[in-house]
Length: 134
Image (cartoon, rainbow, N blue to C red; front, side, top):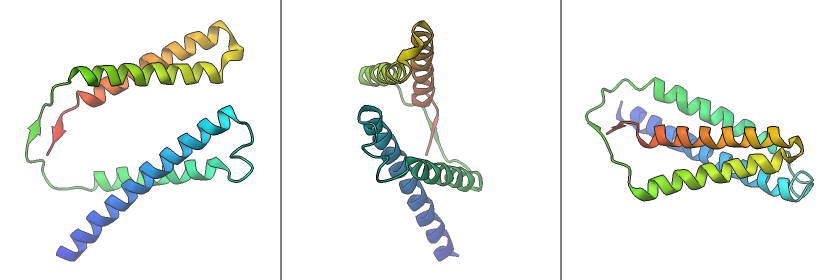
């Protein structure tokens, strides 16, 4: 029983690491491909890495749904000023990347990038203000 729980916990950690690594690699390769067309697509199809990230992310969610232990304590962590700066930087960077990608659309590109920026701000704010369960 103990070995089974330990193996299950280890498997969860491995899948979480695979998800994080594959998502980061996909985003970096896509960013490089955005600025130097053909630089990464000659060697590897980044869609395969995206599929690995998608499958490992879904597997991670399935493992979290199967968790039957009751949460012990709920804590509320207050946001600090650098959290707000991080959210602002993240949103502006994402909006700029979206605008660079769809610059041909003129004023619609500006509207779409502004909507992406606001969506990133709201999502990050909700994630930072979520209740932490320990």
